Length: 408
Image (cartoon, rainbow, N blue to C red; front, top):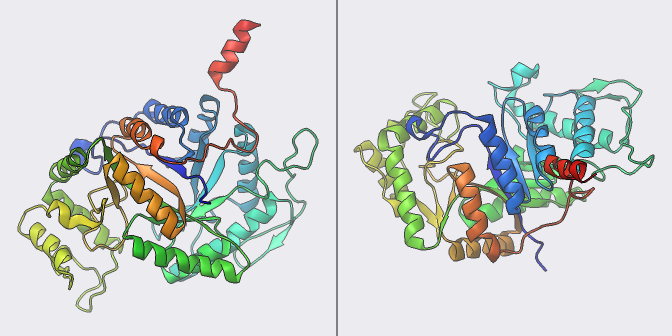
């Protein structure tokens, strides 16, 4: 029997109808971010993927405003000393009733050095595997001092989480660690330490191969690995309405802005493109043996937008402009959308669960607050959702405390 589906939403300070374009972006407002969390909690989402300047501080302020919503908070390996991270995690879990999830982020040359982490890129997954192994052991109270290749600290061990003078940890045996990694090193790392392996929405056959590879690594180590996917979403009452809105997003983004986004991503090495002629490829260097992909490239070079359906990699799976980065013009597997009627999108989700074993979906629709409610209204009644309470059950919100105070 399939597991109930964990549906999470996206909470990002950058928001709007199409925030990857200056004209589609709204002014940053911390109250709007709070409202997204409250709406997602009331609508029945399992959790939310969160980003921000300091997510632990920002997201902890949502704890008394929500009851069951889990928070998937990004952490770079080494960003916090392992013992410091465990102390943060245990405090957050105790205050929230066990609603913390770690989003393991491997980092880049531009990010990790600011946290004092300066290792070659080919060693980052090794560093990360050591980091998360130690964090899990510390949370469970299994080790005190530690001396490894990348991290070392001495006894005494941090105190275990004690609730009502018992030795029961809030989340046993540790706060779950979710994360991604599509390269061979990333897949090996996922099998070693992740609890839920995340991919970007893409063609189901490619997703299946990627997830199977990570699960094979986990199985060799005597572990099991759950799977999830990150997806943008446009869901409407009819197929026509959904695809009409996708076309609007494409047109509002515009061909020149799409090219600029692609150029920026090429400079950062985010496309898997190898050229002998130069170190950094440009948009004009892009070519493909796939006629459909080449049509996309040719259209943009001619100052036109790619055909809407040429960006559909599988039924109801669309590679459109998105909040994760530039349009996935080369079909390399990130930034995909679910597009369609509620019935069609629900069918695709159930197929991915049945055929690829994906039972967690992190969704984003723009603008975030409006689309979170639309997805809940249209899609949730068609799915078997995980509505299990967090480890310690729902927490009381500020409003409930106020009602109790008035009643007394």
